[in-house]
Image (cartoon, rainbow, N blue to C red; front, top):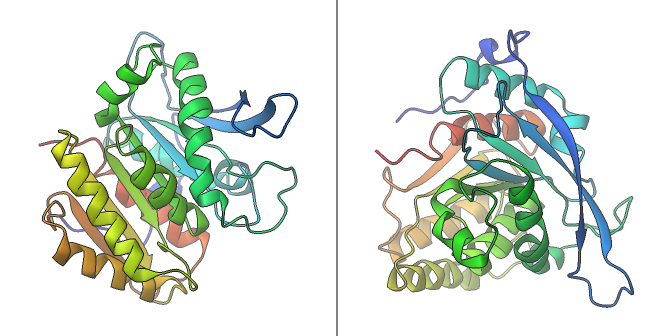
Length: 283
């Protein structure tokens, strides 16, 4: 499959059919040092024509370091325009996109590298149940753990930069039973990370998942060749591809390199555009 190395102009045109970007609030019980639940916010993109009578695939999409849940849809509102046109042109099936934050404070304090791992708890215990009880996904409002595992083939997780690290640590390594589709955009462990350990964790996760009957539908990695995260991301995934028989390039694994791409939103929006044309396709 050939992927775009530049956003098509048609994706930036004024859409004839617009989806809705809706504010969503929920409570997190994850942070046990707090006397009361932590109020959290996210944005939810609902495609044009959204109806509770239909079931939708869902993507949880994270920002990078030092910003918050506003990044994808409020800081860069053209993201919704791209989605509107992508769905209107029939390039992929319309889906729900949720943009939360792993930060606990508003505004966020520091980079929060530790949260790339710890967000796994909030994701599983608080965010997914709250969202999928409210909106029409394949969970059909049943947010029991058993049903969320049963419907994992209709759930994806993606993120950019520190959110890419979170895609590995919170979603892949620690919640593989809840997600079957992954989109790490720009990085795996960061410049100070242990690349050997990341390769090991990828292989262990996929091998253990296979033993439990949990398959990887797709790992869709994207990074520009001038991105600061390119070298480490490329090395880790090249090594993992060799070491993990569960990664089959061109089938359930892609590493898309954007020529001239850097660590910026144009590249990440293009990553999302490409990834959505792979997610949730099983043929």
